[in-house]
Length: 249
Image 1 (cartoon, rainbow, N blue to C red):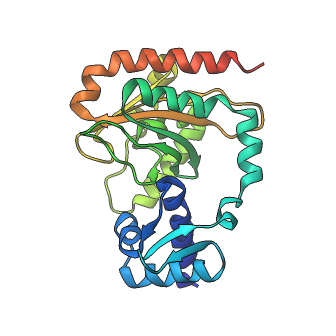
Image 2: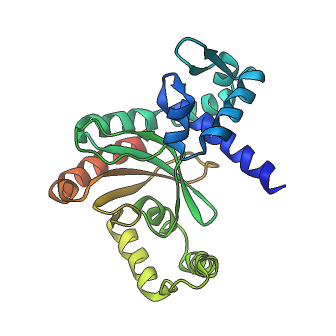
């Protein structure tokens, strides 16, 4: 059963890899990007080809998604972005004006999923692997989503996080709840070297239509550069998130 679950997870990661790559890739490129063994990556890609989700060019040894791959989940995507059409535009504008990595995040239990990523266009940049998942209490995008919840709900999540950490030093509840209060007051979260050394993220919650799960937008980059530009980035984020909110009835 464990092997089946692992294979299913890796298959979905391959889908996410191509969704963000926007180009063909060889077995070694997929394996290197996702950290998979070369042999099992080859087997997975051949299986997806046999199922009609990938094409293979024998000359270049590259795999390319097919139309069958492209239509997976199309109805969900179209339904969501028809209602929340300003979010992709907001992400594009933030990347164009900051040059940094932009992430769209959603809570998944004790983690935060980066469901859409625009990689930095700067020469020195912070790269986030497509489909990344982080412990929700660490990055700014996770913290800003937690801050939307009550202290009792946050406390329950933090107790579950501490239980999952096992022998690791538990995260103190009182300082964490105090940070939640600061995020609610300030309207943004900030994390430094929370997951990757020498990086920083600024994040804000996004206004979404009723019935949608909460979303957060994050701007990430090298620590020094983000510190120098933090005030300007926060103003830019506030302006654009406020404009997005004004478009909702």
